[in-house]
Length: 343
Image (cartoon, rainbow, N blue to C red):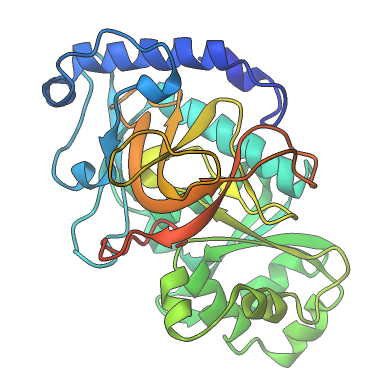
């Protein structure tokens, strides 16, 4: 278990410890995963995080990476928006524990420690897949430790509004989680009954969402429009939390802070690479996002190069969180749309 997770996610960083753990994890995967070793046969060590091997996200659609000596429990699947082919990430008990601890620490930093009811914009049947879990379900599950009760809004395609009213009637605050497009279609535009709207006007709601922005952009729905529609008629203190994440970096999520930045926890880092040279980009330069974390033991998804463009933001953040922070600029032109991220 990584000692880096024993402190709050956004504080003084021990880059040397992060590098040591990342190098050790890389060597473990090279020794135990033949496919990974075939891609990076000459790795002998790294003097910086930028020198670590990485895998392009597209490889996870073609190769089922697994590291031997680890008991794998299930496979995490991306939503395969365009190609119909999902990324596959093999999960194990150790990684699952680390990833759950990571996502919970990050979410607590944004929504607080208090537990409250959780409403999920999904059908409970989506949880009943043996040996596999989708990115959508994994994101919802990350909120379960903060939930006193869990209510699924949908039965098939039909909203069960009475269940929501029953779950939150006696509670001053609650969570709502959904993929971005589902939150817009099923909640913001979903025909909430007038009696439930009146009830919700007295509730503090934390809306948490990820993925699906492309569908809303096609309908010319902006972030401001989504947030405004969700918060309309809710009690003071309600807020919308948009987080970005990848199935290939399970457990590490990047919520949008009050100042419009995405922060990297102390057990991970982000590298911006020039799309043409693959060298680390100059400060302020836009490039491909590469993410590194020390949570992945079942397969070599600890260092992943994405098809998302971003840039590092300089200086301290007005929100008070420390460590690297970045902004997203969108997808590489003509890259496949991916349902598990929100660009």
